[in-house]
Image (cartoon, rainbow, N blue to C red; front, side, top):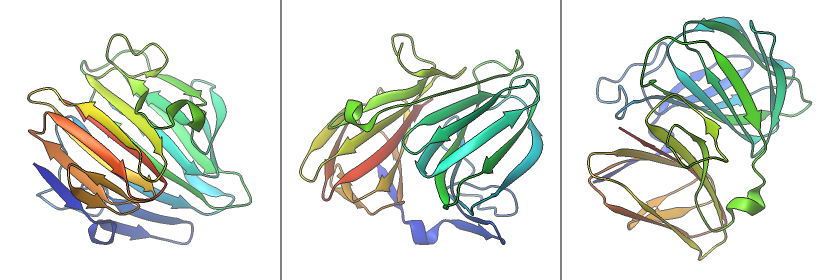
Length: 232
């Protein structure tokens, strides 16, 4: 089963510096049909104005993955970590027993990103943060783990969840395949371009909730960039 979720039908929030679309219920937007997908709880599509961002605030017991689509985001937290994550790259924050952080666009251009929250396998633990580049050339034509709690994904950022976050860059006409184990939930969004997933067409920034599909074939109808989450 693949349920397409068009970008134009997602939850919305706007103010003077943030233009957000919510794939799942979040903050003041609530849809009882979209409270999560397996252990995936949040997938926000954010546009952050230059020299603005999220002020310091706290989290606990959540794995928070940020995939930057354009621009860059600068992270600061209560552990003393600070870092800039640029377009195409990924950062992970394991909130654990509790952490405060700020996420700011210090650039002169709008930053766009996906923020993805996944429930951890075990509550508590020391909070942590990490970031690393993922050159698009290394995921050309194939899905590559970007953040993972699955053994064997050594090159991915570590998350404390039974989940994987994968990315692919596909030229028009290219295909990437993925095997989805029985009982798993997948959620896919087209960060850019247009793709077809097992015959279902997704435009840029559409989402797709996927279950009971043992094999996924993702075909680019135009040059595309996709992000896929595989979780319990």
